[in-house]
Image 1 (cartoon, rainbow, N blue to C red):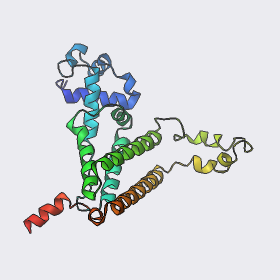
Image 2 (tube, rainbow, N blue to C red):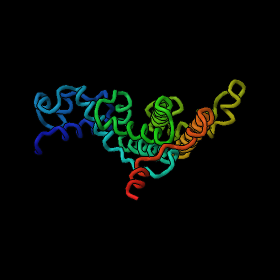
Image 3 (cartoon, one colour):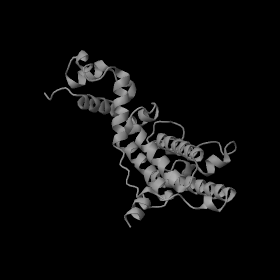
Image 4 (cartoon, rainbow, N blue to C red):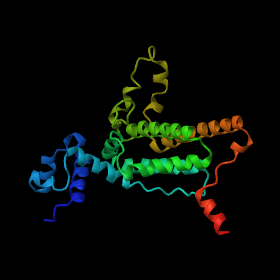
Length: 234
């Protein structure tokens, strides 16, 4: 049997969460899955809460950001959002756990720092950058909860359930009945990209409006760190 380590305990917790959900996690259950005594876990994690924090930290550390600092901010935030979506597909139930817990670790702060830096370099004020990030988080949480089927309202349905909207009373719900085929459509990629594009376009317009109010100096995006380093080398 491999030695008991913190990474092995965290991996067992993630495996259990993905199979049965976070409510199934207990120190006793994890110990049983690993074939060890429950008390031995406490040499590596102090409590169930600490274990769940470790799960959240691991999941966040797996986000792979590939946005290019030289690209426009609109493309960078798009790539960042896709990276978060990808981790939700890799660890759907664990990602929902992440979204329900406060950020305490460097792994959790890194995505936030990257997003804020992208917006600040684009010319957003500190206050607007925070508001934009919060708006993106709200969109991602809502979109991904629906996509991975965690929330029941308008969540993906099984093929056998597709007919339930088509059977509604068209007198009471004429629009629902007429658009039933679209309401049960499950092209998550298209839906995510549509909402993301809509959000980015709206935020870009807000940046333009703010620039007009603040004058010509505000219309120039802040020079990116990468551009500054390139200028210094030149």
